Length: 114
Length: 117
Image 1 (tube, helix red, strand yellow):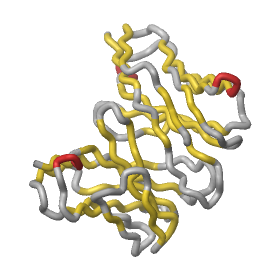
Image 2 (image 1 turned 90 degrees about the vertical axis):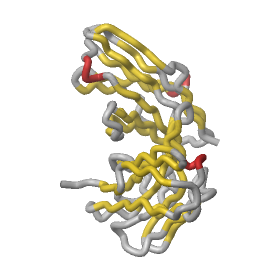
Image 3 (image 1 turned 30 degrees about the vertical axis):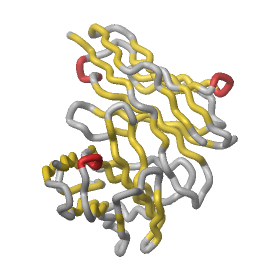
Image 4 (image 1 turned 180 degrees about the vertical axis):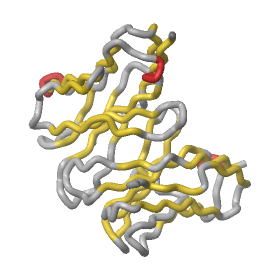
């Protein structure tokens, strides 16, 4: 089954404790991206990757890191999480950066930073 | 800069009523794509439709229909004979159409639709 898998689905942690949210897709997609969803703000892009070893900042990259060492994986790293990073996070992928390709989203990761 | 406005924040209807969700967008691009996504209470994002800026034909899929009007920069979504299972947050989104560029989706803030039995 074609899917984007995120882990964990839920996490409660404390300020400053490094964490990684994993994202894996099994569709051989080139393009991957992370979004955060906050009430009243919709979804905003954090980082994206157009292919292996090619990553770039989205609209709200502060406090986050990513890597793309393999095509299927695109982890989101919070080196020193803070309460303002409490949010619902989505990983997405599409076959390439061709115009208008629908993006497939993971089921989301709800992070609470205390 | 691209912008998507969903002016309605919450809509409540009774089952079997028709409901229209409004979406207005802004972009300087002449070529772009518009999307609708559904987020049910379980939280995942479900792709509903994609429309490119050159295709202004309305589309119907079962009880769902979409009206794209370039003249008013709108891409509205109508659910006919709504059902309780339609209760969800609905997002309209816009992306530019340049191959090789960031395929970022610019989302509206979403509309929470509640369908009461």
